[in-house]
Image 1 (cartoon, one colour):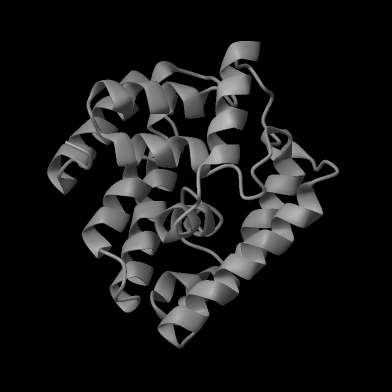
Image 2: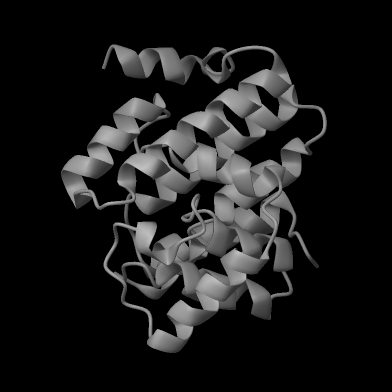
Length: 200
């Protein structure tokens, strides 16, 4: 089983949320919603798969109040279940620049885990699903979907910035442009929540 069903993915997320309650669950559902909407408009992608990948991208948070290590926890959990494509997204969604140092979260992984993550993201060729979840992670607050700039500012206020932050922001904006070119319209036209976020 490389990709679970939507029902199974939602059951995994519900169980994870019971283990470690928090706004990350609603954030994951909003990533899934945005990914599904963009994939529906981009006919080369499967909208159901996009939803499931978005739903499970942060599933490693089931293990508790961790920082960066939620990505390796998610990868390990999903690999054990045979969900290899979802496991991959757990590792790729945080690293637009393919550099572990771009993460603002404290690195609470072991040295061996950090080396594994860096080797994995360096060697893999990101595809449109990797890029889609990277983009949608930057569009989703726990409370709603939002424009990219709002999410970037909130993250900067909460976590600070580092020497790679501006490069990462540029990459996020490039991904937005890329998907808009594929669907022939602004991604913000796909769901009303985007417009609503401007006036909140």
